[in-house]
Image (cartoon, rainbow, N blue to C red; front, side, top):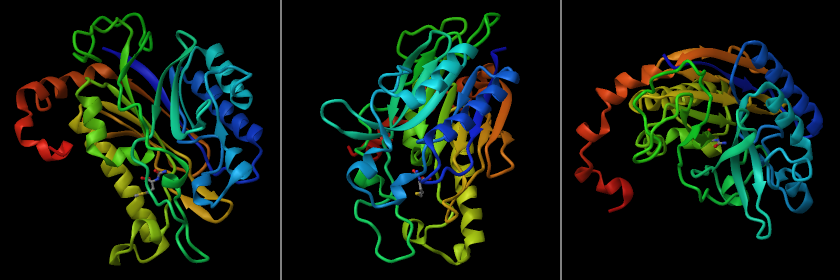
Length: 342
Ligand code: CDT
């Protein structure tokens, strides 16, 4: 077996005026809980410690306050995030941490996540969101919900690089799931192959398949998904009320993560920031850990801070990777040209 306890740290609303330190305290409380439950990995939502600011029209310092420079646990570079790294180091816990990134000299903005390995005490991977939803120009009207990610971020430029999380699995592990992160790569005994997505990416099978083709065993994805924004989502007879629109948003979340986990024979940990931010903007919950057969193993039941935990066995991925989704035997790439614009 390749068993491991993993956790998703769903966050309830973070308002414009929620102090950053208060949000970090809440995140640490969830990490304490994860540690008590023996979790080796914790996944936080997209742009975790602040309100989902792309819904607002912002400029200058009002906008820049939400961005962090280099996030690697160094106090000088990202002081308010340091307590999370300190705690993860103490607990030897791996961490997926989403934040809004502003690069060094050229000041490019990305919607970013880093993977910190508590085993080697280092940020070992970074991913920048590729699929940015919404619009560049704000929607018109007084009571609209904007999603200005195309305005505030550049599309990610790092692609979908699966990576090996060293020593994430216990030492007793003897056999991997048949997965390889790269051509010719052999897994260390305790390594797991991990891929990272951010929110809207989870709706795109191409993103998952990029990881699937690298033998991914565990996909991590944080999200902020509006439950009601007709300007963004469009309307239909089925989504005429706020209640129905939210039901549909939850359904599409689950549809995306369950099918793509199945079709790539991998587990996934999907984590929301949710509830009503500023008492006005509803975000869906529905954080889930999904297994490699597409089944939900555990699901959040609130729209508040809530830890979901599961013991999963990455060896289960082997069946899908060797049978139904043995890509090298069954894919017919000669017919897939349109997908990459050939
Ligand atoms: N943050 C983010 O990417 N949100 C989008 C909003 C809905 S667009 C269908 C999402 O995909 O959840």
